[in-house]
Amino acid sequence: MTPEEFRAAGHQLIDWISDYRSSLDQMPVRAQIEPGDIRKSLPPTPPDQPIEFEDMLNQLEQRVLPGVTQVQHPMHFGWFPSNASLASVLGDIASSGLGTLGISWESCPALTEVEQVVCDWMRQLTGLSEQWEGTIHDTASTACLTALLIAREKASNFAQNRGGLQAEPKAYRVYATREAHSSITKSALLAGFGMDNLQFVDVDPVNQSMSLAALASCIRQDLTEGHIPTAIIASVGSTGVTAFDPLGPITELARQHGIWVHVDAAMAGSAMLLPECRSLWDGVEDADSISWNPHKWMGTILDCSLFYVKDPDLLIQVMSTNPSYLRSSVDSEVTQYRDWGIPLGRRFRALKLWFHLSLDGPEAIRMRLRRDIGNAQWFAAEVENTRDWKVLTPVNLQTVCIRHEPVGMDADALDQHTLNWVDAINQSGLAFMSPSQLNGRWMVRVSIGVESTTREHVKALWTMIKEQVALSLQE
Ligand SMILES: Cc1ncc(COP(=O)(O)O)c(C=O)c1O
Image 1 (cartoon, helix red, strand yellow):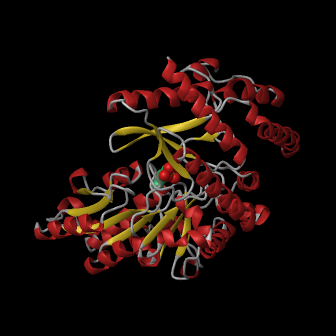
Image 2: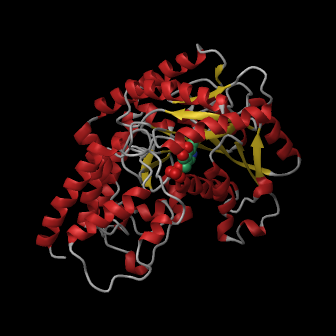
Image 3: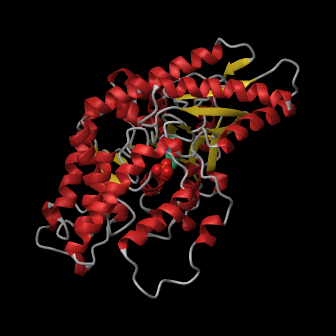
């Protein structure tokens, strides 16, 4: 494709995206297809002749679009918001168009330096002090794995330069709660700690946040048994119920024992743009690493996960590679982001964050986040004030965990009832929510925060839920 052909096709594609975005509320939220349908609709063998761009767009519309669950739909209340602001989409397109290669500062100086600047802008916007330096990873999963790799090497005095963890006589321990995201377990396993050394710390039964007494007890016992407490993953806004582990006391305890604290604020980091929410991560300054995803609630299109550390030298000691073909005469003066994480080649991810912040502006983003918090409070109050309905956990931000509990239903029947009504709504395509378990029992998470979701949509959802529950009880 020549640049001129690209120009013509690109205009068509942008028009198509604009039409799609302005009409997606007419589509079902959840993809209305069966497993295998999309695959079957595509030819089993690769094309042998090029096709016209119009044909390509038709195929996108007819074969791909039906298989898209519309997470940008205003009636999407599932998982966590995965907003993709159009300003950030433009930045992503610019990144693709530039076709840069981020393998060293020299391979694209702008890639490194724009990333340094936008990470620092985000640091300022979330009220973090100047002691933090940031980079952008693809996901919070990668950021957590990176944090655990550094914690492991720090605690073991760089066992990687000897026989690695395999040769260590003592066990290295990681602490998190069962409310922590599944990526925490995955990271601990990938970093070689082993399931036996991932200690699940008890939570406060009311707000599901890490119990400090339980954490202290786990650490004490591990020390008595000769293990090495290595890292605590503190959830700042857990996935299930948006619980907040008490960071201040956790970091204080960690300091006494030299334990690394990684703050997983994948979702709730966005809230830190709001000064009134920052008390939720009091103590963050004493942590060792932080990750959070502008690609969730804040709305910089996936993939954009911020990772901050105070001591990049540690990252470099663990991750650095310096093959001759990547060296240049300015190496001593510049940041080499390849040494701050796992991949060598990086995309120019900073552009989407730069475009988003510059074109939409932080104030508009803050107003939207406040709107969503207000909508969650409104919805929670409606649920609380309706007979047989419960809000199960504190509404700290924008997630409301609810259950309809008719009198006289036993626990198993209640589980079935919950799954019945939420499945019926999800299958209808009119709205989407995530059923999830709390203390082993089903409930429904209503996660408010899609860019286009207004109070009217939340009201419509509440009406729909009550009608569906009434119907389910009749069946
Ligand atoms: C609290 C929390 N941590 C980590 C993650 C993983 O995020 P990612 O998909 O960026 O790896 C999620 C995803 O929803 C999350 O909610």
